[in-house]
Length: 383
Image 1 (cartoon, rainbow, N blue to C red):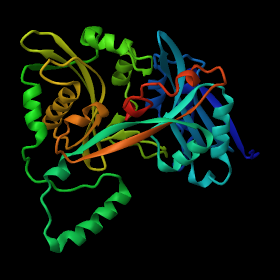
Image 2: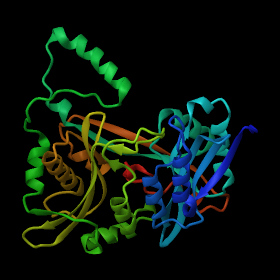
Image 3: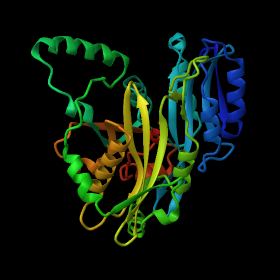
């Protein structure tokens, strides 16, 4: 498919910051900009990237941006060998250009790069396109705990219909409904938190260091044949270089993604057994606000809990503690916590993956059915 009015251009990691500055300086108030300066600066510091790696595929209609695909280099480990792969970070076509074929041209250009590409965490509309252009590669689960729903009082019958209509209107604005909760009531997680953290000291740190990774967890990781790797350099890069800024959004331009939120903060923690001072591991949380809700997400973690509890129990108890301290009533946790949820109000999210192999000799094809998928895969940890 071709359209003489649509031109597709490639932007490398080395060019990204300059391209972002130039695009922003030339954009009008209703023009789309493919990347914020904040994201461009962050991605240029990606420890998994080289200056020649492709970071953006942009469809230009005249001098305007009609759509784009964002790419971020990452790492696939097979045995003891690491291979570079690329995650989609964005795929957006301006509504005014969706009849020009710009979306198809972007996908075709991505296919022509002959690099391993994967995608996860996308909209339903984008999923239809990925299913036709890529191949499926399993899915990963995450658990969402909504404490506001769990503590909300039951409405009187006369108001149920009005509340139902209000929820419908709110859902059209964002995926989370906003409800008025009652004062805190004891939940199963409260007792679990007290039990699993009774002999644990939590320390807020600026970065995750090698000494924060327990030895037994390192041995466990080595037993996994294939996985997408987020090593300490990648984790700390994420913490220090957030894609989303905290504060008021700049509404001068149109972006196909969040550029700013009223609250956006990574919280890296190290945990120690109080009685022995043994390091139990680390966890990285993201505290953010979206659609009027304060949300706590648990991302990177390596934990070797005391003998009195399992990994999922300790992570769930830790999440309950941090959420209570920061007044977060919406939590998102990895699948390992599912058996520790108890009677909480939860939703299980299934997040599918799709891939596009570089060619017949791609190492991705050798292990695509055996890769350990993780909640932190893709661009999920960037917000």
